[in-house]
Image (cartoon, rainbow, N blue to C red):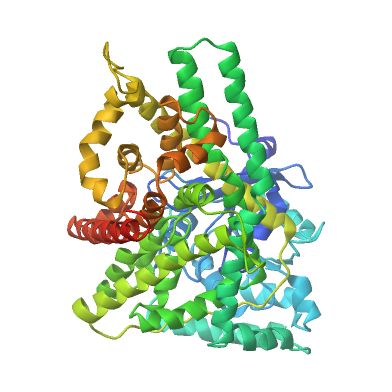
Length: 626
């Protein structure tokens, strides 16, 4: 076999990895390099987001770039940090070690990233330091001698401004040069977890380098301090946080209306077209009742989900989310939660699974278990389609006091109910079962900066693609199953009830309905609750399919009307409350089993959450028309 020459090297794409602290602008740099040429998924075997993209350097070299989860050290404590460490060291199964490590630094705050860089040097991989947000550092009067910094660290150093056109030119040229020097990947065998003496020595070395290469700012950042006096105040800060959350949920309904109506109209027109050109039969039922009514009833909520993530990404880019963590830490302390519990609980608003896995950063076993048991009470994004469907069907679209959207107010209340209930459960667990003090949560607050519109847009589009992928896999397969169960074996000769009552779905629902009758649930709800164990949002698509097969909602626009016609207000509100508390996700229970290495804790969570859901739904149903 002949050795590879330069033409071979140029033909094969080099593989680089972006490494850095959280909130260093790494994602903005990734977006600036790759644009729309990126894909998002999960690493094999773990629920940690994997972002990979591609670009070409000025020299024509093809580059594959991996955006690794943010970390402060290779001494991993969380699943995200573990993935970053294992990829850097070439130890992650199914993942090739990078040819070049690009350490991304916030130029306004180098102390923590330099500690990380000294650890990365021990990994033995080609390494490049990029000083991102260099324009902000210069504006604040922070003088950084990049050449001296490069000499002191023993690695190349370049500057970048990820949010400006042409702001990554020097970085691309450096990558082009260094990719030629890439050597075969190793497994990081020379790296070892640093000892406490070694850590202290690294801290002293960082301080020496900073003193030699970085001059203190001539113009201190007074605006950040002034804003934080308000946003971090125990009273005004909490009030501002609640106001921001309240306005977000108002926008979810107020802004999404036109887009939702357009998507609904498109699916309704498609259903009408099929009904016009296909004769009545199984094929027409499959396409119209199974696919269009099922998938369409979920996709109409895509605008709400995109608006929600738009605000979350915007606040993250602005630098406000770490402030929210600081504020919530104080409240969580009153409930007896560990300070580090904020990160897992915040992650659980997207999905409880990565939130539960992120509890590995919590040292104490009891503190970790308490966080695991309450994480599913955070309202995950899978609940949004259920909430918005029922709210739009049963809550009038009107203004309260001429200012507040009533539907958004109800949505805000559902999120608040989950949060408050989680704190109450944590308080009970820590006071009655697991007494003891909790450790403080220490974190560094970044300076405020203007969000990058391109970064926000790409983040929203990525979340939309993930939602559509979920709709095209899990929800699609479950809709086919529900349609089949709802359509066979069919009504016998001389039957008086609708055919769906004699189907397998009807049999299952009617067998479970006596258990759920005291809380006002119909047999259709019983069916979708069982199917929804695969994914919560299946409930909406399942209801669309069931009522379409039954002849009550042939189009997606008719589903809300069908529910309003068949259900009482008490039933709808009871189902909303049920979804706040119910353990409606088998994947979450499986992750708890894996994280605790026992079936005891997922069983305990299922029992207490089911009891909470049933009791809350029972009271709600009796109060509102049961």
